[in-house]
Length: 240
Ligand SMILES: Cc1cc2nc3c(=O)[nH]c(=O)nc-3n(C[C@H](O)[C@H](O)[C@H](O)COP(=O)(O)O)c2cc1C
Image (cartoon, rainbow, N blue to C red; front, side, top):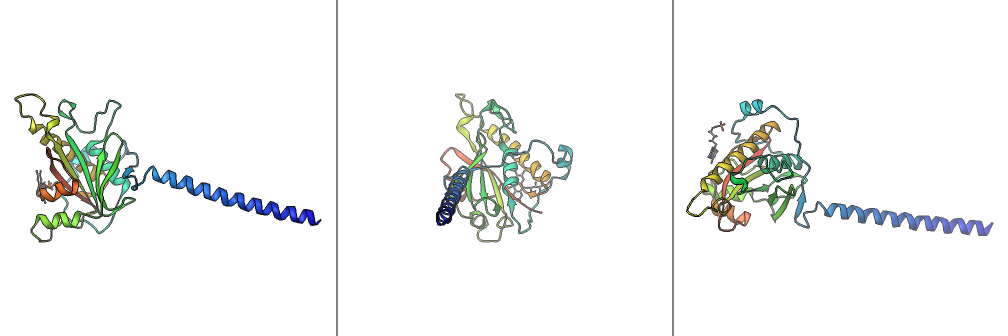
């Protein structure tokens, strides 16, 4: 009888140890799965974009308007993912994108300043169309400082934006033909990518404005841009 009680006690102990072991294993697995989408590694995997649904192109075109006043509410990482994809997402296995590109040279880069995005730490990020992910450049909300400096200390309507998308151009990628300056192609592409993003904004029921007035030096600093890559379009997005 004592043996049975002792064996039962041992079994309980073994069961408890096994349970604790399982919990530890589950936590380790969770930590590992988190690290695949971790900002610790600097790379944030984005939710897959929708390629269907939303509203018609005609409705988006007729409803698009520059919106300069946002609610004090966050965007979601799904919305941010969808907007980045609309601007420059890869849409086939050859690497073609949502926007056309001169000679398929893809001279654009897209960046995100996240201020208030659910599921994403505030910071400056670079978008990779191939991986559909973001790489952190630096953490911390840069939006207020960026727009305060562009208006000489006056309050700029863009200061409280939850997210700002920035399209840059790398001019060497199109200027490969000796004697020909094809830089204009980069500006054309920045326009088409930005319009894609603006139409997706309408489809998501959000608000945005294409802005070209910004402090270039601060923008270069926050995005750590090298010579030869220039910021072209700055698009604050928020909930209207
Ligand atoms: C190249 C370009 C630069 C612009 N720059 C700014 C800007 O710096 N600030 C701003 O508030 N709006 C800017 N806008 C938005 C225009 O003011 C806006 O598109 C125009 O008033 C027409 O209004 P809508 O977009 O609602 O149709 C810009 C638009 C374009 C195309």
